[in-house]
Image 1 (spheres, helix red, strand yellow):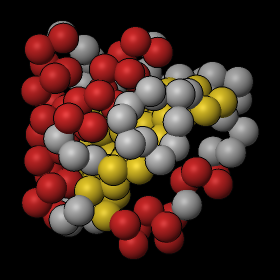
Image 2 (cartoon, helix red, strand yellow):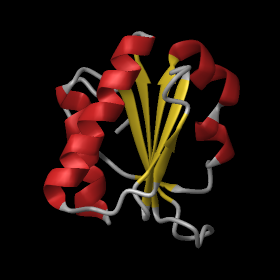
Image 3 (tube, helix red, strand yellow):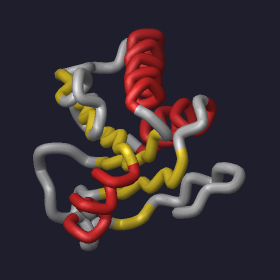
Image 4 (tube, helix red, strand yellow):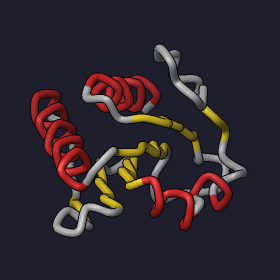
Length: 118
Protein backbone atom coordinates (compact mmCIF):
# COMPACT_ATOMS: atom_id res chain seq x y z
CA UNK A 1 0.00 0.00 0.00
CA UNK A 2 2.69 2.49 0.96
CA UNK A 3 4.58 2.16 -2.35
CA UNK A 4 1.35 2.78 -4.27
CA UNK A 5 0.54 5.74 -2.03
CA UNK A 6 3.98 7.28 -2.66
CA UNK A 7 3.58 6.72 -6.40
CA UNK A 8 0.19 8.47 -6.47
CA UNK A 9 1.45 11.35 -4.31
CA UNK A 10 4.48 11.73 -6.57
CA UNK A 11 2.20 11.90 -9.62
CA UNK A 12 0.16 14.65 -7.94
CA UNK A 13 3.32 16.55 -7.01
CA UNK A 14 4.63 16.21 -10.57
CA UNK A 15 1.48 17.97 -11.82
CA UNK A 16 1.79 20.82 -9.28
CA UNK A 17 -0.73 19.74 -6.65
CA UNK A 18 0.03 21.53 -3.38
CA UNK A 19 -0.29 20.81 0.32
CA UNK A 20 0.00 17.05 -0.13
CA UNK A 21 -0.83 15.04 2.97
CA UNK A 22 -0.92 11.25 3.32
CA UNK A 23 -2.26 9.02 6.07
CA UNK A 24 -2.23 5.35 6.94
CA UNK A 25 -5.68 4.68 8.40
CA UNK A 26 -5.43 0.90 8.82
CA UNK A 27 -5.53 1.26 12.62
CA UNK A 28 -9.21 2.20 12.58
CA UNK A 29 -10.61 1.77 9.07
CA UNK A 30 -11.25 -1.54 7.33
CA UNK A 31 -12.66 -0.10 4.09
CA UNK A 32 -9.32 1.22 2.80
CA UNK A 33 -5.75 1.61 4.03
CA UNK A 34 -4.43 4.96 2.85
CA UNK A 35 -5.60 8.47 2.21
CA UNK A 36 -4.06 11.28 0.16
CA UNK A 37 -5.23 14.90 0.34
CA UNK A 38 -4.14 17.43 -2.26
CA UNK A 39 -5.02 20.98 -3.24
CA UNK A 40 -5.56 22.18 -6.82
CA UNK A 41 -5.34 25.79 -7.98
CA UNK A 42 -8.49 25.72 -10.14
CA UNK A 43 -11.30 23.48 -11.35
CA UNK A 44 -9.36 22.78 -14.52
CA UNK A 45 -6.26 21.88 -12.50
CA UNK A 46 -8.31 19.55 -10.26
CA UNK A 47 -9.70 17.70 -13.27
CA UNK A 48 -6.24 17.50 -14.81
CA UNK A 49 -4.86 15.98 -11.59
CA UNK A 50 -7.66 13.41 -11.51
CA UNK A 51 -7.12 12.53 -15.18
CA UNK A 52 -3.39 12.12 -14.57
CA UNK A 53 -3.99 9.76 -11.62
CA UNK A 54 -6.30 7.64 -13.78
CA UNK A 55 -3.55 7.37 -16.41
CA UNK A 56 -1.02 6.39 -13.73
CA UNK A 57 -3.38 3.77 -12.28
CA UNK A 58 -4.10 2.35 -15.71
CA UNK A 59 -0.38 2.13 -16.48
CA UNK A 60 0.23 0.26 -13.22
CA UNK A 61 -2.84 -2.01 -13.63
CA UNK A 62 -4.22 -0.82 -10.29
CA UNK A 63 -7.84 -1.25 -9.34
CA UNK A 64 -9.96 1.84 -9.87
CA UNK A 65 -13.40 1.69 -8.28
CA UNK A 66 -14.78 5.11 -9.12
CA UNK A 67 -14.71 8.87 -8.92
CA UNK A 68 -17.04 11.52 -7.51
CA UNK A 69 -17.14 15.28 -7.99
CA UNK A 70 -15.37 15.55 -11.35
CA UNK A 71 -17.94 17.87 -12.95
CA UNK A 72 -18.02 20.43 -10.13
CA UNK A 73 -14.30 19.90 -9.33
CA UNK A 74 -14.43 21.58 -5.92
CA UNK A 75 -13.73 18.22 -4.30
CA UNK A 76 -12.85 15.20 -6.42
CA UNK A 77 -12.66 11.80 -4.76
CA UNK A 78 -10.86 8.92 -6.50
CA UNK A 79 -11.15 5.39 -5.13
CA UNK A 80 -8.18 3.14 -5.89
CA UNK A 81 -9.57 0.35 -3.69
CA UNK A 82 -6.97 0.48 -0.90
CA UNK A 83 -6.22 4.20 -1.26
CA UNK A 84 -8.61 7.15 -1.49
CA UNK A 85 -7.39 10.38 -3.08
CA UNK A 86 -9.12 13.69 -2.32
CA UNK A 87 -8.35 16.61 -4.63
CA UNK A 88 -9.73 19.88 -3.28
CA UNK A 89 -10.05 23.51 -4.16
CA UNK A 90 -8.59 25.46 -1.22
CA UNK A 91 -11.93 26.70 0.14
CA UNK A 92 -13.42 23.19 0.10
CA UNK A 93 -10.39 21.67 1.79
CA UNK A 94 -10.46 24.10 4.70
CA UNK A 95 -14.25 23.82 5.05
CA UNK A 96 -14.36 20.00 5.19
CA UNK A 97 -11.12 19.66 7.21
CA UNK A 98 -10.47 15.97 6.49
CA UNK A 99 -7.12 16.26 8.23
CA UNK A 100 -9.06 16.85 11.44
CA UNK A 101 -11.57 14.10 10.72
CA UNK A 102 -8.85 11.49 10.10
CA UNK A 103 -6.58 12.77 12.90
CA UNK A 104 -6.12 9.27 14.37
CA UNK A 105 -4.43 8.09 11.19
CA UNK A 106 -0.66 7.83 11.02
CA UNK A 107 0.92 10.57 8.92
CA UNK A 108 3.13 9.22 6.12
CA UNK A 109 6.21 11.23 5.21
CA UNK A 110 6.11 11.80 1.46
CA UNK A 111 9.62 13.24 1.11
CA UNK A 112 8.62 15.56 -1.73
CA UNK A 113 10.40 18.86 -2.42
CA UNK A 114 8.65 21.89 -0.87
CA UNK A 115 5.94 19.70 0.69
CA UNK A 116 4.07 21.45 3.53
CA UNK A 117 2.89 18.24 5.24
CA UNK A 118 5.50 15.51 5.49
